[in-house]
Amino acid sequence: MASIYLDHAATTPIHEEVQERMMAVMNQHYGNPSSIHAFGRDGRKLVDQARTTVAEAINAPFSTIVFTSGGTEANNLAIFGSAYAYQNQGKHIITTAIEHHAVLHPCEQLEKDGFDVTYLPVDELGKVKVEDVKAALRDDTILVTIMSVNNEIGVTQPIQEIGALLDDHQAIFHTDAVQSFGVYKLDVQSLGVDLLTASSHKIYGPKGVGFLYKKEDLHLQQQLHGGEQERKWRSGTENTLAIAGFDEAIKVLEREREERDRHYEALQNRLLMELEQQGITFTINGDLNARVPNIINISFPNTEVEMFLTNLDLAGVAVSSGSACTAGSIDPSHVLKAMYGEEDPRLTNSIRFSFGIHNTEEEMAIVAEKIKPIIDRLKKVVT
Ligand SMILES: Cc1ncc(COP(=O)(O)O)c(C=O)c1O
Picture 1: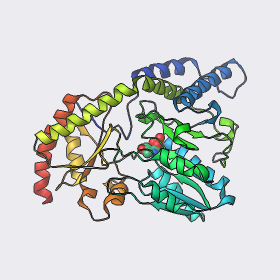
Picture 2 (picture 1 turned 180 degrees about the vertical axis):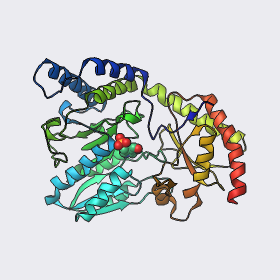
Picture 3 (picture 1 turned 45 degrees about the horizontal axis):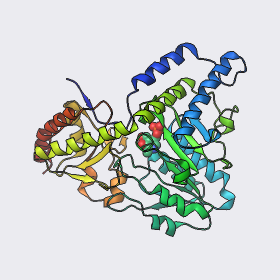
């Protein structure tokens, strides 16, 4: 039985053109970019080409791009790096309750280290209010870190407005753009951000590589100590193979972005239509008017997420709850908790569907058909 993969917010397959590029690099370009001989210069060229691609993609200068091992490391570098570099100007940080753990956990660690962190709430639609950011700002705020698009519900946040608000404040503005980089054309100048995180494996590139955009003149405390790679912002021999793959993934993305977005929109509409036609009761979590087209989080009343996911998996449909899986069981989503409070049934009956370029509209019809009997079965168990 063919499986239907609808978990692209977790990770995407590697695009064919990316695979081809990586095979070529693997076979021919193994020089260490720090070596001064021809092999090394070849490796350096490859990394610099990728840096140019990234810089042009987000309208940033070449020298502001720091390659990392992915979104988690870029977020850690942004948060610890700026907090420790600017702690003499204050120890207050603002973030939101719905960030990815790669932001929340560094913030929690900083609290243990004596920083004061404000976790902004969101409304029922999963949106952060610019007024709340304004109200939370203090003279000693040194960092504001707010995601562009939430990975569980796909809701977009008002990054540009927050960037404008922070224009005349000392606070550094970081955005985790891991889930938006593959959908929106991002421009760090018009967004008004000082730091921006993205990751390759969410955009059909290889795993284990990402970047941090770091505005010129901004200082970060080094998190890895060693060689002088990445202008000393990130020591360690560059992962040339993955960086080249990321380069190619961005080039393909730039070429196909609009077509992809239209495709995701069509898939989403078809899935919702098919669910309705099957007579399935559901509600959508998150703002319908401010969302990426490739992620939709749906609550199915009277179901239980763990059983639902297992049944879907057995039926050949790979989806996710969007929240963390601890020791085989699913924790109630911190994002849905922030939206609805602790007790709401949607915390335990919601599923994230995230679409990709290889999905078809026919698959959406099959998914809805497979969901129907599962829901009917689960209703008997849960109610
Ligand atoms: C919003 C967000 N931030 C950060 C990350 C972590 O990125 P990586 O897997 O590249 O470490 C993810 C991955 O799920 C994400 O969705």
